[in-house]
Image 1: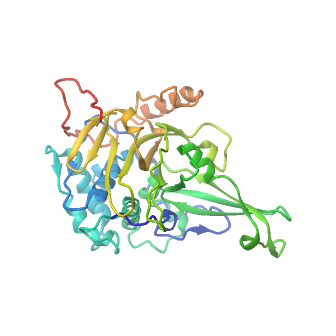
Image 2: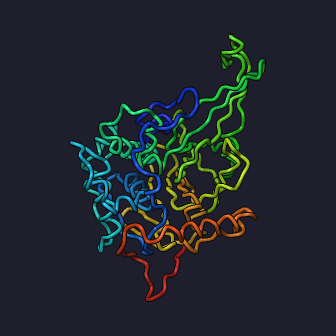
Length: 405
């Protein structure tokens, strides 16, 4: 059964709060210019994943990670295993052959044996045979990859820890700004995040939930702010904003209630293209567009049971429903109608050549911005994995047609 949702903001393997602002890293663990956001060769979806008994949560998360372009590009290059000197469990050394096997397999489904063998090392509270929460498993898996990238460098400053390839792909920073009502003093703190958990009780769409997330909170009464300038407890406002945006934005729509064990099954609309700019600390400037590439769905009425599956966008630009062993072609219209639990967006500045947002979803000023994105993509050349192969169950002659549910 899915476990109650725990905020992912505390799951990173480094301290959550940076004092006195953002400081430059002492070391760069992975050169950012080596991160390749562009799929280098078009192919259909790879293999499905076998369910060995209540492992649908694991399968759905693994498929979403497998179709994360910058992570897949890195793992397909096998660069990590060639340089890894870590003794014992290494999540990157597990993910590397898994992603290669899924994307290059000629069979319709494989068993994620290496991940299952390392299951207890990913999270001590996980038990094989018991249905776990997919969001919890995602956080623990990415955190395990982060630890693998740090290796023996856990004593590094937090800014240096954020330069691993894992954090540069998935991680960002939130800013918490508190303004004292009395003296107007501003106090900023910064918090690393893997994903953004959003309350959806009062929101009918993703933009509305993000707007609620950045709405200032009034601190008063028992929640008064201790102002260092006033030297007393005072009323204040507190506001979260995205300070450093990640290359891959993961959003968790908080559907499970830890107290009632119930599930929020309401419809929450989400766009194919999302502008994150209005929710940034620097709200002015060019739009910060993200493109949807994976949706993880929970089917069921409560956190005590149900089934997980996902929709992912393959490098050929087509969407597939991945339900354990089953891999089936689907349309974007079907993808956007789901009762989403986790949403995965990639920065549009790294869109593959030829992709464009639809006029109904993108801002009116998007085309000129995206033309610049395409130009930067052309400059990327052909760096990355070559000769990828794959298969899908839904190929009709020389044409591929999206089947509807």
